[in-house]
Amino acid sequence: MIDEAIIGKKIKSVRRMKGLTLQDVADETGLTKGYLSKIETSGKAAPVPTLAKIAKVLGVPLAELFGGVEKAERISLVRADDRQQLARGAREFGYVYELLCVGIDNEYMEPYILTIPANTTCVPTDHPGEEFLFVLEGVMKFRLGEGEYRLEKGDSLYFDASIPHFGEAAGDVDVKCVMVVHSERGSVSGGLD
Image (cartoon, rainbow, N blue to C red; front, top):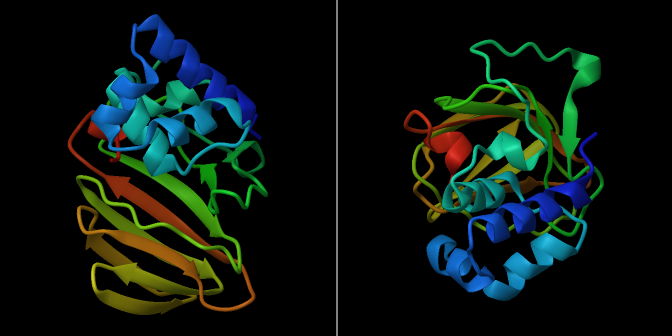
C-alpha cells in the first residue's frame, strides 16, 4: 500500500524544487490554495484525477508522486498481491484506487481498480480525454453532465471525460470497478485534469 502522507510531501517537495508557490499551482489547476495546502499536509491523498492535474502543473509523471519507479519500461507487470493502493479507507476524499500499471512513462492510458465506498459524497470532475468503467461489484449511480446512469455488475460505460462526471454507490454496498483513463500520449501521467 502507498503511504498517503508521502504523496503530499512529494508534491510539496517538487513544487518547492520547481520554485512554485501554492498560488501558482492553484492558478494553473483551478484548485484552491487551501485545498492544495490540505493535500500537502493532511496525510490523506486526493483523488487520482486531482493528483494528475497537480502532476501536470509540476511537470512530473503521476507515478512520481506515488513514489514512482526509477527506470521507465514499456512493460508493466503488476501481480494481484503486489497492487499498490491509494487512499485505502480514506473516506475524506472518497475513492480508493489500486494501481494496475506502474513504471510506464508517457502512457496513453492509466488503468485502476476503483472502489467507491457506500455513503460517500463525491465531487464532479472533468479532464481531457476519455474514460472506461467496468463494474465488478455493487451498483453504481453515475452522473455524466445532466445524465444519470445506473450501472450494475458486468455493465460498462465509455465516455468523454471532459464532461463533468462522478460515480457513487447506489446503496449500502461499496462499488468496485475497473477504470481506464485515456488521453493524449504523455498527458495522462502528466495530468488527467
